[in-house]
Image 1 (cartoon, helix red, strand yellow):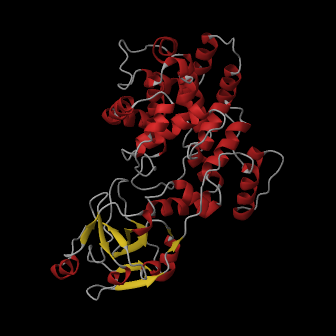
Image 2 (tube, helix red, strand yellow; image 1 turned 90 degrees about the horizontal axis):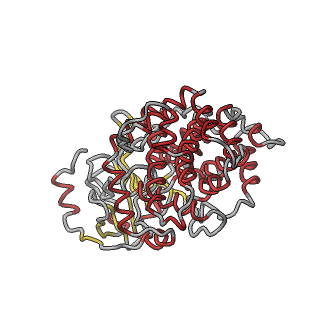
Image 3 (cartoon, helix red, strand yellow; image 1 turned 60 degrees about the vertical axis):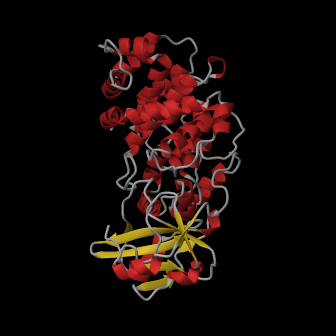
Length: 438
């Protein structure tokens, strides 16, 4: 990144640090570019930056420059020695906190000071206000939300079956067989091993995970039966096989959010974190490990569904995410589709008769203070997503871990720190397995 000229540095040398500014005062910077065209955009943090509004003004399809989740872009006008575009809603504000290049550090100023003759500056309306809670803690309106989204953005209409309406490929035979087996309390390990062995793709991944450096099995498994019985356990092996089969039912979208882990890496990180957290929960209140692992594998399934069902809009969603990295994707989904991707994903998982624990975890993972059915799985998945978000390993903006929520699951700070350290130390191993999965 280019730094400021000496003249511009003088303009901002007297800015004072702003310690713990209120959210409504915070202002962020976004670098947008296309070829040699580059601008610094300055917008309020409590708003959604609409890149299409910027494109209408500049007549150029500018995109946000890739950055890691933990990185911050300076909101000091002129810092990058490029033209500046300021959201007009900031100009009349007396108390503003501009982000610096140091995460969590702000500089105090006012709206009128954002306009300066040292650099090219324009003002216009670039943002839309954020709506309220994005994830409702009830399914009562899910069908109507999906119906409205489909009617607004496609020529489809809700028919008798949701999966037919969404034109989702049928569930793979291997997945159907695993679901049937899972529903049978008297199934045998031989039946599970037989299903896995008949699908070479699933079998290779199961064996690869059992022999991964993350699990560090000694000696390594030489057969599917050995991997299931001695290393993974029936529940985890079944959940993993089911998650792989479901994941393969849809193609990966062509578009992707720059700076974020690709789909399978996100999936592997989340599943490993869910399982690791679950194993720290006291035995008397511990949820089923296999269902925890499956919830992690399918936590981001909505991304596949969105890319498949709303393909023309998925690129727009990705571009908006890149320009609004401080927001969860639920706000972006709401802006473009009027419903979060988790609603559609969960509806499909229910139609495919997956365990309700998994469907609820996927559906409500971003709901605040969820207390409904299967709250243990929901809250554990929410905690896993935040644990990964704190390390920049998914699209969850970094935020403090909720120790009270962790305590309600029987987890203490030592356990959370231990899992976070384990995942961080295992990044290369998990990344290698994710490449194998994909």
